[in-house]
Image (cartoon, rainbow, N blue to C red):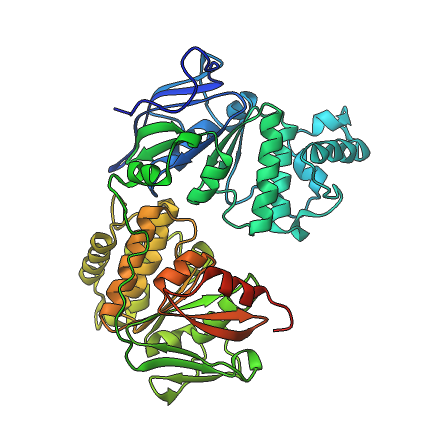
Length: 508
């Protein structure tokens, strides 16, 4: 049973919903993704949809977009029952969806992408009027206050610009409801501000937005109402203005999280990794010791990921001096780094951390195949045992260890990447943006694992753009800019403003 909405307009003043979902049910083998969910959208509101990974958010959006069909329940638009049999049916109802992975055609220009599938509106008979298409595309972009040139090829656009094209395409389809799935995940703070301006423009035009995000501060800035899902059920809907973040977190995870960053501090051990001459510059060396978490701070392009990749052997450079456990070393490949005892959770889990078409069992045991091969072949029983142990250890939500990781939620995919290196028992684990795009409960689990690793005398090198997280969870923090290390600060007591000043200062 869901909790009653609170803090919003009373029944008499509340407008009729633009869309309602009643008793929605969706089941997969071994998993009840949605269990009788009631959800409604008011005209011209920004409605936040939140919940832990696997709570059912993506499933709900896919039903509204027509990508999948519900097993039970009813959808009403303007008070009348409708059937959403597929994506075209969803579009005809005025619903558009913008996923994290864009659905643009890179080889076409902006105007062609905006009117893809709508060519009859900008042509005569079988002839496409390119001039008219570009003029109308310009008009749509102007509505969004975007100065993007309709003639530019999409392949050359930035991530933020591609997102504007996706939103413009929804507007060109005269969509009344726009579903946004983690729209800010790949954006800089500046681009997020532009996205919010666009959302406010759409809202002023009467468009309803469903905004899915794990970034709680964004939800409280841009949404009018919040609906919380947990384990496939609607926990409750709240007016954002009258709700505190702690209450939303409690609704999401079913418990209080009094400490968001449960850092355990202990005396550091011996130096396990040293990098000198970083980026080809003499200066501050990077040192990582046992039983500590070392953070890397910096803006996008500062060289943090490149440094991590070099330490992992993915992009070796000759000019850096590497010392591993007191001896000179230079991993020339990831295989060599893994053999030394180094693991890496990359920023892009789908492209670099997983083999999406393979099962959870196969992905978890990829780094330890050398230990699982026997004279007669693969130890399948050992594979299943190790994969099962990691599923239980990390609380990975999956119907089976044979499930293809492609079908897991983003947070569970991230746990599978982490599970690979826990199974390998690496001495140094490099984490590149480990909590990006995962919910508060999964973040807490990630921090717990970091504590467990340092308790075991292992070391963690963490890259994060979330400064409060970096300060709270690091024992020491290095600041990078222009491929070089500028400064070192103590974790925990470091001041966010001090670090940001160091990151952004000119002439450093």
